[in-house]
Structure formats: C-alpha cells, structure tokens
Image (tube, rainbow, N blue to C red; front, side):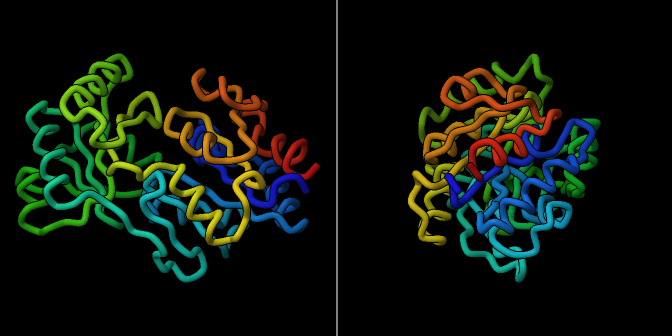
Length: 269
C-alpha cells in the first residue's frame, strides 16, 4: 500500500452534484480500509452536517475533520479532540466588518449556525448541508458579545459573480490576519489564522503516527490547497479549480468517481 492514510474533501470531491455518493466510491473506501488503510473526511462543513453522511461511507470509527480543520472529532463517541476558533475580539472584529458591508453572513459556534437573514441563499445552504440556521432578532455581533460565543468559522454567501469582489474587500480590510479562502463558487470563508486543512493533516499525522509522505489528500477547491501541500500524495478531481490541479495529480471528476480512482490506482498500489 503506497499511502497509509487517505484524506478526502467532501463536497465536490466525494459527493456528487445531486448530493449522492457513488457506489464505486463507497466500495473503494471499504476495500482500502479492509486492506489496512485509514480513511478520513476533511470538510468545511460543521460536524452535525458531515456526521450524518459518514454512515453512507461505512465510517463508524476513526476521526472526522470539520470547519477546515478547526474541529476534529472521534466518530464513534463524538468527543472533540480539537476545537479551535476566533478569540472574542477577533470574532467581533470580523462580524462587525461583514455587517457594515451588509453581506449575507453565517457564523458557526460548535453545533450552532447563525445567519443574519433568512433568504433563498440560507435555505439552499440548509438543504444541501442538512442543517437548520437560526436568525436572531439582534445583529450577529451583538449576539456574539452577549453570549460570548466561541466562533469557529465565519463566511459570506454571495452570487458567484460577486465572489471576487467580496473576497477582495475582506482581504483589503484584514490582510493576512485571517485565513480567507473559497470552498465553492457561492462561499467566501474566514478562518482564524493557521486553521486550515494543512493543520488537519498535521493533527492526523501525529495522531496516527504516520509520516506526511505516507498520507494522500484529494480535493476540488481552493480551500483544499493547504491540505494537498501538507500531504505526500496530492490529488485533484478533474472538476476542481485550476490552481489546485496545477499542484496535483489529476484524477477523474467527482461525477466520474475520482476518489475511487485515486484509491485504486495510487493509494493501494
């Protein structure tokens, strides 16, 4: 076996556009684990959103990574092994700026998702991720201050044609103080500094005592770039973004079972 640990992004990499996971991907993951490999999902989703999909993959034990690496949990027990986030001051700084720009905002505090408005964007997100957001009757920044929320992640939902503009405004305001990235054409995500999928690879490598050169990672979006850079095996589905594919071995698209191909043709060889 070439890679002892295989780490996969979820949306756009493992799960198809219609929300399903192919039988071939499920069978390839099962064969890889039966042969002694360790398979882990690393996603930007919250734990409650990804946990409900793990059974489809036959994953009832091991670790799962959420919030780009800010949270890592034991699948069997639900115990959090890592729970990082913004400081109170950082969370307020980020949310207040996003409110000033009148963006559609999501903030994530553990198992809670809060949004500043209920509209078609929120409803689409809820349907895709299988979670329900709360829209408080006060500004999100006031709620963060009043409840002293431990905010793991913030994001802006916007139309694809506005994504570059939104990202540029956030980066102009904060520079490199936070990790700003894209996880789909609709989302601009803001994370605490150094809370990336690369941090997740480091945690998994230490937890399982596996050298990074024996770890493979696969993804499709810009937020997967740190993960691939930190792993020995770097794979991108053909349906992924060009900057990611430029540094990876390109395998078939998500719709054509790219994860299964990477496992069968590379990880298990």
